[in-house]
Length: 387
Image 1: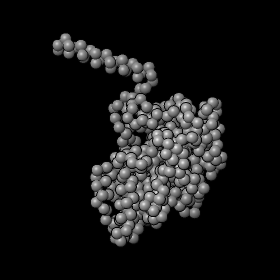
Image 2: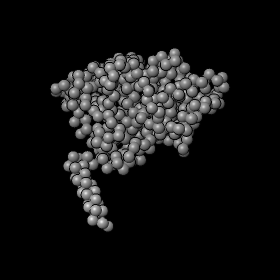
Image 3: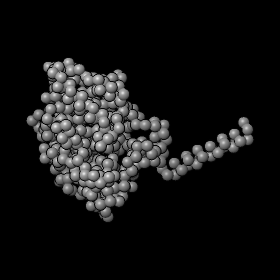
Image 4: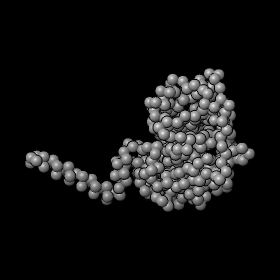
């Protein structure tokens, strides 16, 4: 090797050593994991610690519609499945499965990452905690549950502000920066440390800024309010009452730690559809009220706050649910994950749609384009008179 080559090699080695030393001193060892795994994946339950959420001993099977799997899928929907790599697609109408398909070895039993659909689940759990009397209301201060929110500007933050993504906290919602709070929360092993670093930099309730940290704070609130882990509370008050067919999993930062509340609830299309059915019926499951109907209604109302980026009034977000008011004459609400995970509910059609996959389309006017394609395609299927 030439002298210049040795010099470059030594320089590169020195940079690596200095980087490793900085990572260690800055307590950012999670970066190695982030670099190794590169991008989040729907099967990341194989690389993280998971907490099990048991299904009930007696499940409630979905009935199959008379026209089960007799609908023809439009060409635009087939193209979406191919280009965005769907792994599951399910249509439930009138509380019966009308259509379902799976790809790449996935099935109605396969666990798949929900990503930010978990935020909608956390919202459900807040409603349940209010019904149980564990939380007084959405106006209750966060500081009633978390001591670090009892002083200074953070003492002004209420549960509603977290649900509306309007806390004013300085969370860094970046998915490509290996040093962001989102990356550290996903690949790191100390969610409490990340949340403790948050500071109030804006007045809460003034503007909407999407932040996974707001949901993670809600996760700590729920744990303090109920005295249980998110998984245990969800298992007792949600998963078992809706008769889920299979155990679910929730990623945690350590074996005895806290769930990644903003993300990473793993289940299958059929059981995810139960969550849509629950809200389709205003929080009621058969004869039981699990989530207060008034809370469900509030969840599905736009928060009306100005959006931080452009000041436009928010008509697309409620309590951790995405909203499409009057979309082609239909009111639509849905849960969504970053790789195209959706639970889409269209009350006018008594309809729940679940799509799970590995990619999603670009976001235009606050909604991914593939959500529109899915809704339009399913409406076309239902109007085809092939049922």
